[in-house]
Amino acid sequence: MAEGAIAKETGPTKGRYVLRLNGAEAELTWSVVNPTQIIADHTGVPDAMRGKGWGKRLVERLVADARANGFTVVALCPFVAAQARRHPEWSDVFV
Image 1 (cartoon, rainbow, N blue to C red):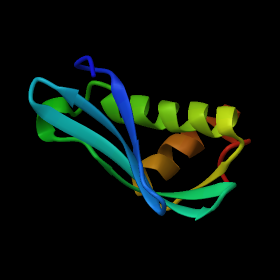
Image 2: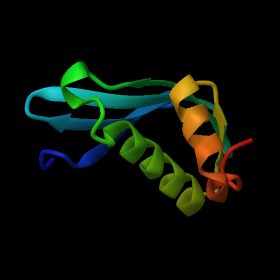
Image 3: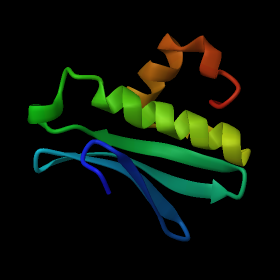
Image 4: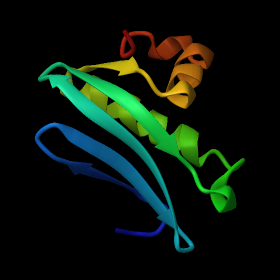
């Protein structure tokens, strides 16, 4: 994976998006509710990466994948919920 690219890691009940940059790792994790819904439950961005938009990029990837793959997202994570409120154009993804 190229540095700064977002990778998707999935398992049967959980998954995450991960972005690695200069040895630091930011992530957005989720849990699977059913085939058409996930819960975004945590976003972690280390201090070295904060304030540069990396967390938002992780949410943007989540939104793009939800649209492309036909699932909706429950935003349990406060950061994801705040991004959803700031971007009403994403309302088709968040429930």
